[in-house]
Length: 364
Ligand code: GDD
Ligand code: MG
Image (cartoon, rainbow, N blue to C red; front, top):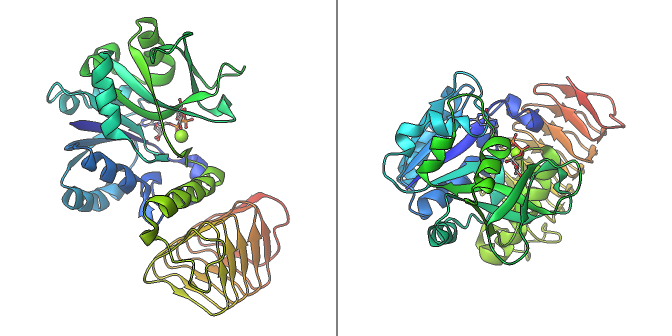
């Protein structure tokens, strides 16, 4: 089977992290985001994966060659001369995607869940329509694509409304599809949106079905959601694979769901958790409090710092007694001086912060 991952462009909403690494390589749960998807695709029997990109694929090629070997899949880049939207990339990669006549899995690169690919494939084959999209329920549907069904129990989608202004329902497109190769016939080689052009046409022809997702789901393409997604992912690991988390008998673990890379060092009398991931070679001093945060590779958090709802980018340093909170995001190699307070700061790579940031702002 084949899959296409819509990797896209600059990942502007996940800045300042994406100023250093393309979005799919930013570590989520201590692994590049895209590794979670590739692992799940390989597990479901996918052999060929196309990455649809419109921006500097060379940064990704090395990392992805590793995954080809590790997961036994072929990975190819499909480079768009101009951004082709969410449907155009299917047409551009047509040659690979039509290689055999099997259906094609399509994924947005920023969605995380327990990818139910095997069940999805089975369900798709059972109804005989051209496409199936995974749907999940959310409380705030306006920033997603919403699906509406006819009365009754059919899985056939009646209407697909992208980013509805008025409430039409709360079952949304989770950004994961399986499509017959015939769907490519519906797409022209130009910038095209699968959500506003292709899905509505498939609904009209009664060819688009929904598959309900079980468990957690999140689009982690923005810092606030990246942190919420981390909480959901760790909670799910706690149930399914607790070996990947630090046992709660460890004195520094507070409230559970803490993931610490084996190469990281944690000082004495720390209180870490709930919902924290700590990456490779991170050094945490004594008496540090961290909750609901992601600390990326090579960072240093000095004694008695207090860190909440923060993403600490790679190789950054947080000074003694510093206090960070409210979706603060540090880019690569940021320094926060001792005793500094940061409230919702988004700090670009290589900056040194010497004065308090009292309200949410971008520091360039
Ligand atoms: N290759 C390529 N080219 N990829 C693109 C392009 C493009 O021109 N434009 C966007 N993408 C990729 C993005 O990188 C992302 O992986 C995916 O397509 C969806 O784009 P987003 O910009 O993240 O869209 P969204 O989050 O606002 O909405 C989409 O996802 C929601 C679920 O998270 C839609 O599919 C919604 O219907 C859906 O509910
Ligand atoms: Mg998105």
